[in-house]
Length: 77
Image (cartoon, rainbow, N blue to C red; front, side, top):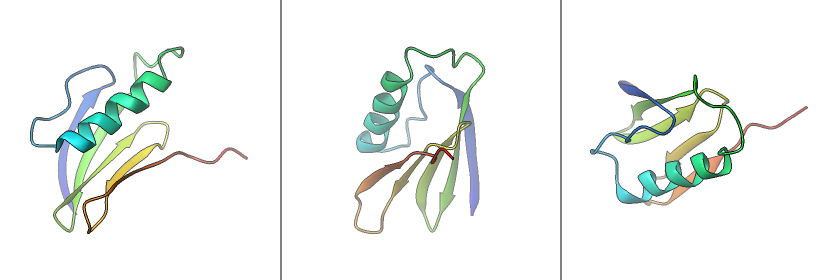
């Protein structure tokens, strides 16, 4: 695993992310618009050369080996 970077919700994601990943980030942030996420941050790491983007609440965006982008939301008890 390689550490990437962190940025706040609402800030511009790193330019090195693909358009599909950036669109997924935008979609997640749109769903959170009704909540106070002013202190939330995204963390970008690289696993096997593919980005893994995780939000402070546990929402994770991954790119599969075939290039598909998935959004995993944390389960609630």
